[in-house]
Length: 70
Image 1 (cartoon, helix red, strand yellow):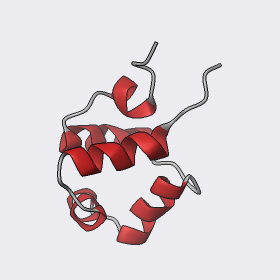
Image 2 (cartoon, rainbow, N blue to C red):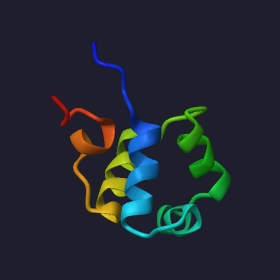
Image 3 (cartoon, rainbow, N blue to C red):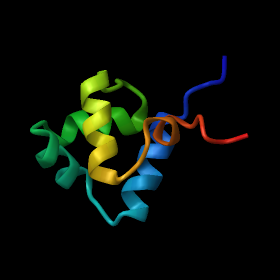
Image 4 (cartoon, rainbow, N blue to C red):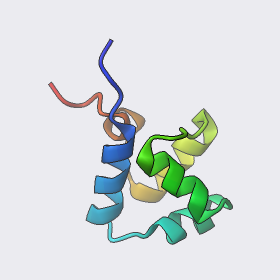
């Protein structure tokens, strides 16, 4: 199975969309610390939160998880 690349993809998408960890946290109703833990790979969001992240960043789940690459 291919290794998930969520932390790097999330960071890149935040940068590309000119969004901050705080803006994402506020949108999700969570803390900036939680977002930081996702970015460092300490934790991962649950499925419903992942879908909200995708909505916020205008990404697909496959893209944010790194499955769109060859």
